[in-house]
Length: 180
Ligand code: 5GP
Image (cartoon, rainbow, N blue to C red):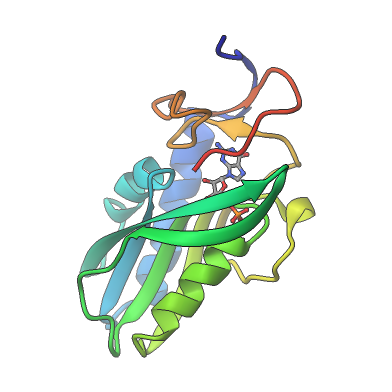
């Protein structure tokens, strides 16, 4: 049985407001850059689609999909399912993530992207769960810092469900496995 959404943590209008603020800041910082935004599938898709429409600067974009493996509750490895097609040499890369949890996915992706020798690599994440961090990573543009609960909605899933919710909600029950 699917667990139900226990409470709304971040409303649709709070997300909308924050996405516009982030877009404004990114547009200012990347004026006159060769900006390439990288959407990390599947979770970041809604955030990405909303964010890029707020940008006032030209930007290319690209998708990657990663899978993390878990032993019990701990991520033990990351693998790339769908890689990059565009050359990132001398580009200004901005990774767009849904959530940074242990930091392992982002750490893996940052190392991969660095191998293309871009001019710069920065990170924009909608959510951050700092209490769960195992690998130190820098988030340059952050939507919201959240407590250590499993969240769904606005692209984030539980067993591929709930991604289409327009808000970020907390699921009933405390022991749900991490989605991808
Ligand atoms: P990491 O632990 O590598 O930082 O995060 C790996 C992935 O786990 C994230 O990209 C996200 O897909 C998933 N994840 C982490 N925390 C949550 C959460 O609270 N809810 C959902 N739906 N996925 C999460």
